[in-house]
Length: 246
Image 1 (tube, rainbow, N blue to C red):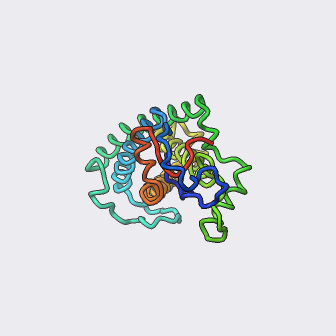
Image 2 (cartoon, rainbow, N blue to C red; image 1 turned 120 degrees about the vertical axis):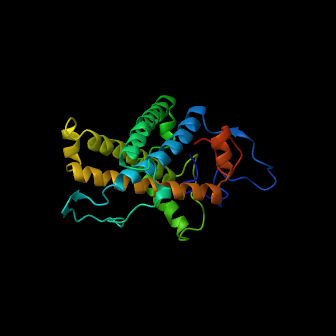
Image 3 (tube, rainbow, N blue to C red; image 1 turned 90 degrees about the vertical axis):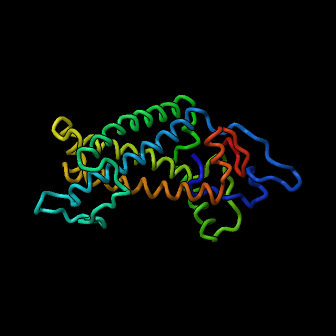
């Protein structure tokens, strides 16, 4: 994926991702493997369907906690009906059917993607590690206009690594909390880890909106900062502003 916070053209002459004057256009390079592209677009479709069907399920009871005993949890949508255009399934049973039908492909695709990262070694360019803390701070200073030159980066800068690591962890939380809701008796130990059924439902709900926020920022930055990465995610080939390898 591309277009997360940090996708801006470097301004430092020392940055190996910049081009020198008169060097001509960048070559067309292979940036995204077929497995990465397939997982990216499949998960995008599955995620949209799961969010819409999840909102249909939520619309059946727009509170957290037992009836008459609501939990005091932050929820801007508490008691608010979800617009029809944002729901998938038509009613509670329909929403559940869609949600379960999409959940397994979403989980399987995610597991296959993580397996590909592990086997291919691509995880090394995506994983946020303690050594990335300082570069992430420097990159943030650059965005806040408190640093003049763009910090050096490879295929992904430190803030991008933090975003990608976060979204994988978020995906795991969403999946696990979903299983805790789906089988609260059989997986009682998992449900207990989330604080019980109602809290598991709440954390599942929160993870959805974090996914929505990440996706909106991700898509906006792709078009605003590095639109060439969109073609790269479709065809695998990239001719843009940033290096394709660390």
